[in-house]
Image 1 (cartoon, rainbow, N blue to C red):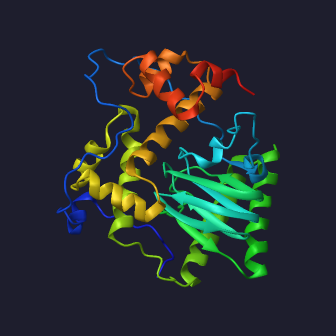
Image 2: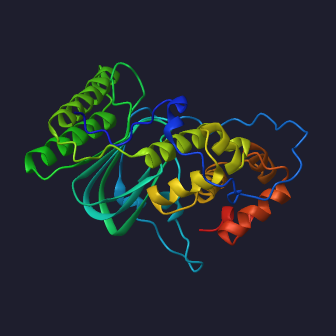
Length: 314
């Protein structure tokens, strides 16, 4: 059996989840208020980076500032990538949350993330390794579900490190056949992943109903978080009560559903503040807030700094 830890069935197949929980409103990201009547402006997204990238994971170790926050939000807060990504940890340990499910990681662990998979990780001490970004194309045929693989054999560790090094060298080259060589290197990584999935034991990693529900919840967040829906909206879409959804999230990752939702929204806010020159009012509209003032209050409540203060901080 393929070593796929998260298999999210179609939402209609989640009917086996209990509905008898008392329908108590789970904490929403922000307090409810009148729907916004004006239409949010069309704001372009950040342009796509190059299709093939290899970056050192050491850059994600993060730094602390006097406020105690620093750059840790870049790893710990929930986010996603617009293309498939592979994290190969060669040193260090910590915890990661992928599709709403929290697990530990250590040296020689590999995490594969299909495009738009919500994740974050919290290293303990310093980490080393690579994060590899690949294009989402049928030509490479990457797995369509998240993976967490642990490798104890030195040969396996050397194989994936060698494949990543080969891709990195080709990225830096500007020789004839460059694009074709990149696609072939990406294909080799895909084939290697497929072979590891076929020989590694299952280890009872198939999630239970709670974890399937949370995986479906995070997939919905990724597709709808800019609309600024409440937890009740997502629970209704999944056919459960807010209370039951929060209970499932607590089982899967130790946090309430509202925390996951708020974390994803505020990561995006931080990203837009740091990586674009968009005015604060446009970022507020892009994330579904009714006004810049409303966004600023919510942002400051979470980060303890104003949006403009965060943008200008080191």
